[in-house]
Image 1 (cartoon, rainbow, N blue to C red):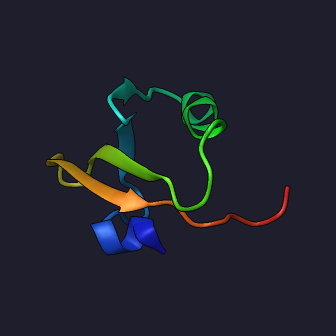
Image 2: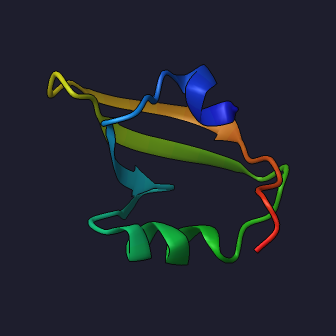
Length: 65
């Protein structure tokens, strides 16, 4: 997945999406809602060791709702 290719793994915490702060899963859902597969996003996250990261990836289609 694009997230895995960025280096995100289980236990990491997404902190921003396209510069919008993300504090909860609801924040992430709201930030992703207007976007579509193929859109490019910049993701900020903190890994389980406490290191901050930021990278850009193209979204893919998720599972059906």
